[in-house]
Length: 437
Image: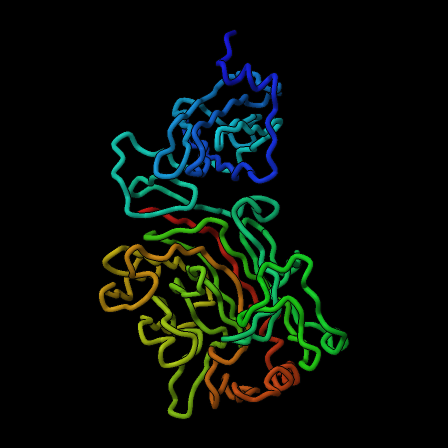
């Protein structure tokens, strides 16, 4: 076997430089065949090599059963593509990589990637899409770029980040988002997010510290520690976010939204500045009426771009539809299609809203658009989602939005709303599928 000159030199001298770290490699396996390796390229990078074996050990600098050497990045990425390689779920690709950066060589040895998903293979007559996906150089129109059927035993940590932080401005919801396996779990082929109420003793305990594992930096919008002078938020809830960011995509989610009073589902695309494209929003209260008799409860569904967190900006561009029973009564398919020209909203295949992009001043309609990640979770209470002076059935809303005792008032009324949590206080997600446009 004849090795290239650079490899022979690498055997003799291992170059180490503390200032450079090889970026994270992205792997994709396709059905019925196909394997792709993508590595972000730095302007100082001039060579990338990949060597691998399937379900067999690969020795240091062994050529492997399949390999590729790429001298020139494409659109900022080194891409090794093997369209004929057939992989199965559970296969392990053992590999090593080499990259030349700023005329110095770097190698990663004894690495393993396990196949957990087989993607739809890009067609030979690929039509380029305007969609963008982190880690992908190019995308074919109509391709599935992200999918989860939640058919494993646990949540796939390669796809999702479970958030942990204390929410602050602007919504001040009455929860802490935590990595709690009893709150966020995969059960019966569904993602299940089920908030739980703390005991009176826990709420009045010393300061809550979520620094270990906190997924947010201390800011106006989130904290990792509770404030000593405030009552601790009484609910532990769950929120997961995709590790992949997208723009211009078609998102479909089959889900059963919660029917717990003062709950609401979080199902939206969110960019790094917390701008949101809402896929589905409805309140957990089955009936929620104002003084004029208007019902904004669970039979009313919203979707579209949120242009602010408080009214009137919050819902100025949202579209809505109403049905005769709460949406929480059963599973529905919620869909949002985001293109350069418009945003379309669907429920069970029927369109209920369209927005012309030119009429929306948002990070999602600028050129180029913001990339966004998918968010799934449950919020409770807060100051922006439930207007004052509304009645849940025959029971008045138990707190006022701008009152400093809002959390205390909410918690002390728990005997009124907690029974509804026991029967319907879950977000259940059957699947998530995101396609390019």
